Structures are given as structure tokens and as C-alpha cells.
Amino acid sequence: MRSASRRFLAALALSGAWALPAGAETVLGPVMAEVTFKTRSADLGVGYTWGNGVLTYGGHDYPFEVSGASAAAIGFSFGNSVGKVYNLQRLEDFTGTYWSLSGETTIGKGVAGHLMENDSGVRIRLDEIRTGGRLAASPSRLTIRFLPVAKKTGTDSHATKD
Image 1 (cartoon, helix red, strand yellow):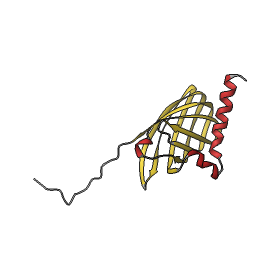
Image 2 (image 1 turned 60 degrees about the vertical axis):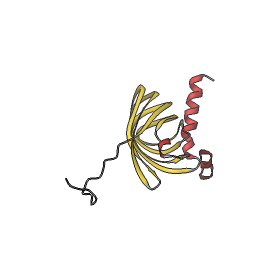
Image 3 (image 1 turned 30 degrees about the horizontal axis):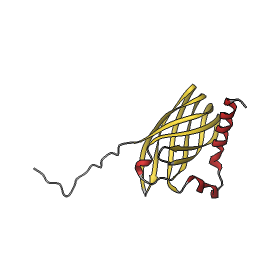
């Protein structure tokens, strides 16, 4: 089998991993958090994905941005994703570079799934609704960075005036 065919089959198999039965999720590690993404992807051979999201962990919401590249894709699509985060032991382990093999065929509106993992062993499984026109079967590399949290304004009852 040709190398490109093997990569395509691997991408399809990994993309289907999002449909794991509930009992099989333990293979990914313990569910520690939930995540939402809003992303856009533009591709012409090599592609670029960007967007933002929110990690819900320990009862708190942490906004983040995501950006990265993919190979062997063409088109444009945007989507909303919801997912689970596995094996997250510390908040700082969430950020970093995630790798995935993914496949997408979107014409108009479609669904997709992604399974991503970073160097800290954190895994994200996403269920996604995409809109646009895009064909992709490629490795992807996405970087997640937390956004700065705006400080609350107002009066502090313990503040002193000069």
C-alpha cells in the first residue's frame, strides 16, 4: 500500500475515534474537564486554523486561543466544537502544542470529530459541526494559549486613599 494511502486510512480511523462507545473512553484517561472551540480553517495544500475557546476546569472557565497548521487540505470551513478533556492533572498542562491526524469532508454543513494529544499527555476529544467547503486528510498541529483574564474593576473596601 502506498504511503499516502496509509496516511489517509490512518486519518479516517483517527477521525472516527470520536465515536468511541462510552466504556471505551477510559482508554483516553480520566475525563477532567470540558472544552468548547470556535474555529476557522483556510487551506490551499497547506492550511491554517485559528479560533478561540473556553476550558471549563475545576468549576472555572478559562478562555484560550488556538492556531496552527495542517497539510494536504483544500477549502475553507468554520465550526463549533464541544468536547471532553482527558488526563488533565494540572491547569498548566492544558496549553501547548497538540498533534492530531484528522479527516474532513465538508460541503455545506457536516459533522466531524477530532482526537488530539499534547506532550503532557492531555487528550481532547471533539465533536464538531462544520460549515463551508473543505477536503482534508492530514496531520494537524494546533497550539493552545490561555488569554489574559481582564481584572475586575470597582471599589475595594480595603483600599486606602492618599
